[in-house]
Amino acid sequence: MNIVIVGCGKVGTSIANELNTEGHNIVVIDIKGEAVQKLSESIDVLGIEGNGATYEVLMEAGAGNADLVIAATARDEVNLYTCLMAKAAGVKHTIARVRNPEYKNDLFRVKDQLGLSMSINPELTAALEISRLLRFSAAIEIDTFSKGLVDLIKVVVPEKSLISDKQVSQIDLLKGKVRIASVERDGEVYIPNGDFIIKSGDRISVAAKPETAAKFFKKISVAIGRSKDVILLGGGKVTFYLAQKLIKSGAKVKIIEKDSKRCEFLADALPEAVIIHGDCMDQHLLLSEGIEHADGVAALMDYDEENILISLFIKNVSGAKVITKVSNSSFDSILDNLGFDCVIHPKRLTGEYIARYIRAMQNSLGSNIETLYRLHDDKIEALEFRVKEGSRIIGVELQHLNLKNNLQIISIYRRGKIILPQGSDVIMPDDSVVVITKHKGLSDLDDILERH
Image 1 (cartoon, rainbow, N blue to C red):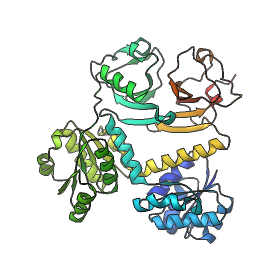
Image 2: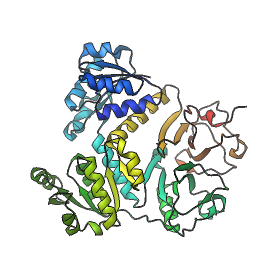
Image 3: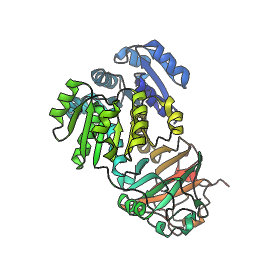
Image 4: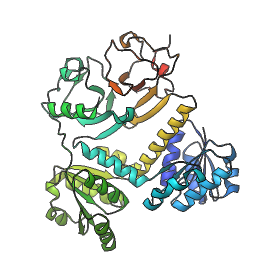
């Protein structure tokens, strides 16, 4: 697709990186020439210096022939106006970054006039992701397929677990209900077959219905409780959205924030939460507020370094699930070495969400990929395909399909029901099929077969 991205800040850069890996033709625009140059030198995009909210600059960027314009500057008003100008240039589809909840609530009134296909709020997106992680206290990652009916949940296998030192085929708990889709061990990622032996300390990604996954984890001694006593460090937008979500789910929420005016706002907006005016980096304050007794803590301050350092402290004094917000992806290797399990990148999440939306657009134009997640530091992909008439896999028992190696069919969605397939199952037209694989660039369901 031909895509124009207005704004080369962290969000725009994240979106450009995500879409570039999928082979789209991208033009980026920013009023700051150095930002345009930096991005265009790092990935294969065309850069234009100028005001992307103006008709002239949009046309210079090729908006007249673009399939999509994404407005991702730091200002909501500029993004919405950009979408209006893009519509005037003849662009059918536009996406705007909109952070102000007041605008978000009113967008439905002017959506058609703006030609707006989607709006994205990075802070709200991050809050929703964190709330999902707090749903399962032991979950490192949770990805969702098939309209929310199948979760892919990553956990660590504890010592002396029921499944430790067993071949996958010997684990009776799995049959027809749960599937181990991938295993991470000593920096390597495996897509296990029946002979693969699970070890304590492995990070396994389990595909199952949410309620079935909870029962499975309980049996293999993985903690599954929802975090009910949560402390949020920092009172910014992510915290605000997350607190609303947690309170609605019945959790007790305490927020620590050093800005007194922000504390007043939070106290008025979130009367059910406990608001503490203080420095989140003050270890004595955290201990006095019961950090060691919390079952969930999220470090959501403005500075990555503060979030990382305080998370290390909390991991040493508390058994809580610790979630750390980080904006700078260059910290990733350091965090892996320090044993950080749950790291949230709001800007990267925004790029991933937009990429998923674009895949859905492409699906209507002929592609049959509905959802794609990059897992285990991009070492494997989990894809959801819509099965179309004429596919070579239709009606053939899975055990007779000549599948590529390092690939597994983990679920089939058919008429509202989920099938975790066995060898005798078959795939039918209009099914949604989830595949996990080490092979990159699969674009059609038939690509899962070995070529003769």
